[in-house]
Structure formats: structure tokens, C-alpha cells
Length: 528
Image (tube, rainbow, N blue to C red):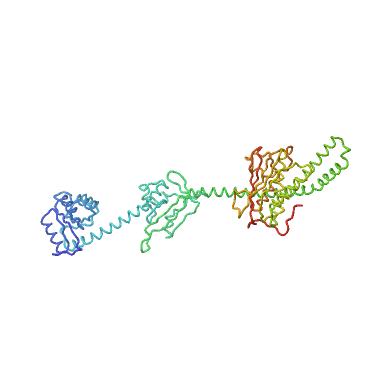
């Protein structure tokens, strides 16, 4: 008869010739395609390898031996061909061995056509389902193995049926050791604070039918006695009808997170302590500055009186003093002037520290610099200084404050060149620096005694000096005032020098008033 192109292809393995011929005839009559017939295990394997049938009908006993089982193992394991065993009678041990080959079914001799058709028709479909299930199982196994978090599955009685490698590593239990054990015995959870045991999440998920999450303050006690902070969630596993089949628990090692949280909390406490300390220091500093400002302000009156009266004393009665008295008088006058300068400088410094605003106008820097230099060198007895001033730009700034800048910078240049035979001070615009349309970098250069550039940053701190007052007079506040004023304008200040090779100060100032410049209302007010 002609075979349908989708007819199931069958290999017959039977050592009794009559039974084999009868079986082949029955199969053909029912529309199956017989790919061949064998009476030994070797022939069965050879024909199956050549023809690759959809199913094999295999007698368990071939020539009095259980060779059918050996052939079935090969067909099932190596060729992925389902096998239906034909059997009349066999001992229990042989049947048990046959079951280990995972046969697609059994047909008991003598068999009828209906029994034969059901077994053969079901075998390929059942085998395909097994293939799909095996692929899904392998995919699931690979997925669970690759997941970095611990995954544990249980049955409906909360007994473990699966641990992935991450779960084995975290709990200290192997898959073989854990399977069949109660979840609570393998995954021992306690509260970190109270040390009391927690109900296992798998049981909770099974009982409530909901996803369960544990307290974040939970510890896992591993099989080796180690303690690990963990986060986990447990969910029931259900079929398409909603029936609960078991539970799956995902456990995440949270030890590192807890350690980070502990460090963050420790740092937060340190920050709170530092902020409180800063507030206390700020309060103490404000009180100290207020006291110092009051003292400095109140000292100006007596100091001006001392300076005034010593001036009158020197002018009207100096000739009545002997040489020692004149020297004492000169010391009083000089120290009075120093004290007045110190109080004025300190009051200006406090004003800048408290955010004194700017009265911004158009300032011709060339005119301002030359005016300041003339006022500083116009005092009788001042040593002649060679001065050059290159053309300087006009900028938007606070003129009174910039005057104070150049009074200090040029005053220092004149002071520290006083011991030179030919003192030289020059002012110009540096070509190195920010773009000229946005910023102007000016330099003030002298050929004075200079200083060690390694300590240049300290030069701009209040009360810092590189030379003693016995060598050069001063308060040590002037350059800190200069730095504050320049920074108030949105600029920068830096210095270059070498001992004995003079010094150069670079002042970078914006060409126009910048957006964050603290502009004051009305005319600029000088400190009292």
C-alpha cells in the first residue's frame, strides 16, 4: 500500500520471524511505514542509524537475552529515537532495568491492532513533549546557574527541591545536601537586633499565596556559622489554574550594602559634629571680630591724639631735648603711625570679610596707578624710584577699592626696593593669561629683595610676613586685603619671586562687571 508522506516510520526489532512478519504486515495495513526489521541488538542499532525511524518496536528479550534493553539504551541516548518495548513475560529485574531506559511505552504479547495503534501514535508526540520539556529544563538550569543571586525552590511543604550555585555558595549547603530538607533548616534567618529566629519566607508565601519580603535587618546564618546580611523575596509557584505547586525564594547578599550604610551613617555623624563645631567657631570668630573691630575703632582716637601731640612736641620742643630724648620721641612717633596703620588695615580687612559691596564705575587704570604712585613717592625724604607705566585698560570696577589695591602693591614695591641703589618699579599688561576681551592681567614688578616663591600662598594670608618689622615696617594685612578686593571683583592674584631678584605681582581683573560681583548700592563707603 502507498504511505502517506506524514506516516509514522517504524523500525521492528523481533527475533521470532513469524511474529516479526505479522507485526510488519499489521503496521503497513494501518498506514505506518516500516523502515526495516532486525532480530539482534547490533542489527537494530545499524538499521536505526541508517534509517532514523520515528519509533522502534523493540522486543526486550532477543535470542533469550535482554539485548533489547541494550539496543534501546543506544537508540534513546545516542539517536534520540523513542522505543516501545514488546514483551510477553519477563522477570521483575529485567522490567526494572527496562524502565531505566525511559521507554515510550509497553505492548504486551499477544497484542491487538488497537493497542498497537495507540502505542505508536502516542510515542512520537510524547517524545516531542519530552524534548521540549528537556530543552526548557536545560534553559532553566542554565539561567539559574548564571544568576548571581541565590535562588531556592521548594515544594508545597516548603521542602527544598533546587538550589542554584549562588544559593549553594551563600548558604554553605550543596544541592545534594539540601534537597528534601525543610527550607527553615537550610536557610536560617534571624533578626540582627533581637537575634530571634524569623519564620521562613517560603512557608509564608505558600500559606498566604503572596510575594513576601523580609525585614532589611535580617541575618542569614550559614552552615559554616558565618553571618550575612540578606534581602530576599519569596513567591508562590502556580500553574495555569492558580494551583500552588511550590515556592521560589530569591536571596541577595546585602552585607556590603549594610557596611556602606554604616559608613554613610558614621560620616553623617561626623559631618553633624563638624557643622556644629563650625557653627561654634563661627560664633566665636564673629564675637572676636566684633571685639577686635570695637577695640581697633576705639584705639584710633587715642592713637591719633598720640600722633598729633608727638608731632607738635617734635615741631615745637624738639630743640629742647637732648639726643636721647629726640631718639625716644622719634620712636614714639614711628610706633604711633604703625599702630594707626595696623588699626586701619584691620578694619578694612574686616569690612571685606563681611561682604562689603562694590560701587562699580568706569575706571581708567593708567590714571589711577600714576596717581597712587605720585602720592606714595611725594613724601619728603622718600628715595627716588624709577617708575614706568605702560598703557593700561579702562575697566568696570570699584575705584576706591582698586586704589587701595595699588596703594598696597605699589607701596610694597617701593618699600622693598628701598635698599637698592637704583630702585625700579614697573606696571604693565601681561600678554600671557585669559583672553583680553574678557579679562586683563596686570603686573607690578620691582627689583627689590624678593622672597622665596615656595611660600607665595602664605603671602596673602592675614598677618603673614617674610621679613621682620625691624627690617621693613608693616602689619602683614595689606596683601590679604588686596587678594580679597581682587576676588570681590571676580579676579585672581598671584606672585612670582626669588630671593634677591625682585618680585612680580599679577592681578587678573574682568574687563566688565561680572554677574556674581557683589555690587553695593549708591556711592562706595569707606570704613570708619
